[in-house]
Length: 368
Image: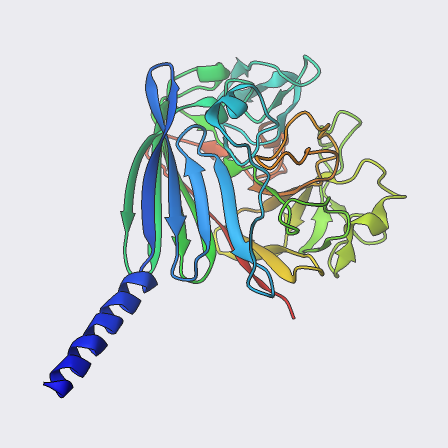
């Protein structure tokens, strides 16, 4: 009888351990927009890392990871409620589309036809697909999980000429949190008319747990070149070497060390080394006090690095911390800004019968 009890106890412990080792996903009602239900999904892996994501704009509301002492903190700028997001925010954590970053003059030509887009940048340009972009849409959502991952799948049909972009565009975005502490973002899309497409996620990362600004963070970006811009942040069309410029971040660099050369911080596209379409380590960020390390992998040719000098304290964390200048750093995996108007840039053209695919991975860990 004693042996049987020991066996039963061992089986119980093994079953309990097995259950905790499998990722989970839970759903919470979070309100509604235009009578469409909005939910907050909590993805949790076997290590206790969690990602909270809503189907409103595909926003990553929280991404909670351990520091070197095992203390868990949220490392993305987020807001507390759906109403907070509806009141306005600078693209915190959202899916951006149809076109991340800028299209100059809010227009482009395709197959001999000119398309005029909505403007929201100085009244002249389009940025992030304009004001009514994918970040303000309620996406359809399904969830699943297996022994390695918790998965949130979001879908949205962008109608022909929405914000001026041609083609009925069917988009799917899968958020996958796995046991390797990776938040993977898989994008696919198809169109019924020729169009341009450039999707990304716009999370603002802060490895202090969003308690201090990111100026003391160290960054490394694996890029030999960048795309210079004019004063309105429109690319000049040049692809320039980073050598001898403040954009040379090929070695670990403290963000604040470049504050004299770049008083308004970074807001630039870097041309990532490697072969587009293959998963490439594009950038790393490290915070010495916590020991947290963030690695950004992508199949995209470009990376938008933005140190959030535009934040003005209007938005606050659920704990009441004001999001002021330089409180976050964005690693926007992308094709180059204004590619439709620069034929020497990698093409963003998508035609019927083709499938747009993109993979971005945000991997968290500890750097000794």
